[in-house]
Image (cartoon, rainbow, N blue to C red; front, side):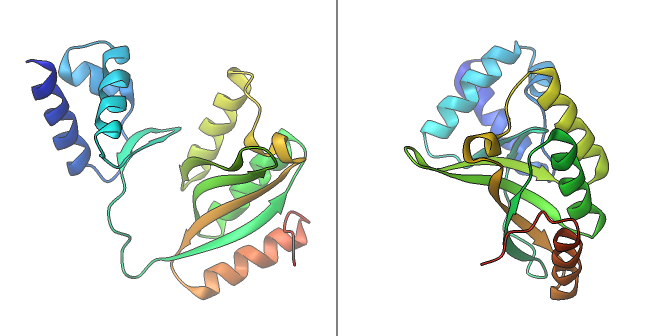
Length: 173
């Protein structure tokens, strides 16, 4: 299989999936190294493909289900334990954390896709954060950050807001 055929197959795989797939998994399926997949993904993105890299792997976001609502919240925390608790609070109350955004004074908006929808996703994210010695994006803004979250209904959003306020993570106007 040449590189064009491989990239076409990557797109076929991503278009069929509703969940992220890791570069390692794609590499195994296609019989190449993970680095080849990383390069292919970069080339596909440069050509206009809407491939998102998340901590769980690559995904093409489908149109959001008409029954889902996207809301934005502004939070603040200062420790890894608080990050984990904040994320678990959101998923425990029925939210899916789509991303994290910080407003950097020099670079402007910096956004990282998260796609966290369960406690297991949170635990994997925190483990990866600690194992790589990477700083969370919120460390650039004294812990202040924005999340886009996907919810089923307004009642779910109300419950998330109440719980985050109770834990003093939410920043209000």
